[in-house]
Image (cartoon, rainbow, N blue to C red):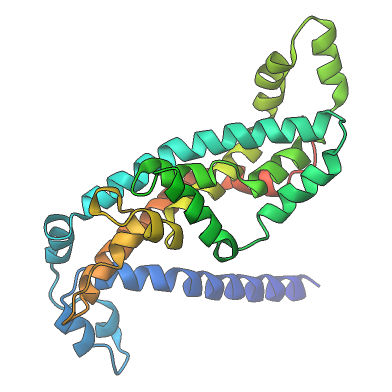
Length: 280
């Protein structure tokens, strides 16, 4: 029985190691390729050997070029500005919406909640034309507002907050109301402190979604002044060549930032996804 259990654990760890290697390999290859020249990338592409992965002549010229020639730092700054405003704004709207859906009964509540669910099921491609037309008529094209306002309310984040808040005992809220607290005080001092995991989960989702957003910024932020990081990656080419080494360097920066943010917060992310009530 003990041998069977040991063998089962070994097989489980082997499977987990294989999954980890498959998951990490693309990021590892991108980072390694970002320190190679365009010529070396293609010279050692095939046949696949250790030289395909490890640079033979290390260089940081790719990083220097994307910042000096393509102003990649400006794209990073623009993206950071957008997420720095959008994440707290979206969390505030979503948390307040979830609070209302979880603790208040009013006419049309189920219809509104259904629309909230539908909003994150509909692909952006289906609404991009009327949305762009609206943004254009408002005169917001090529501005930070055009990148922030359409994503200010997240249906998925609101859904997560609603489901989490429903598990909070209403007796806590009723006790606070009896003590004289208004609804805003109840929300800020009681509900939000209990909602750290779901807040971090929703915040990470909003951050990653906006950090990786390409199609919408490509439409409304066409000038370099407001260009975001994913759009900037598409400009590492001209009519004569595609600079794959520059693309790898930009992609390495683009991929590592969310990873560095997610790693210290993954415990709370898992709790926010799996939590089914208030414990402790």
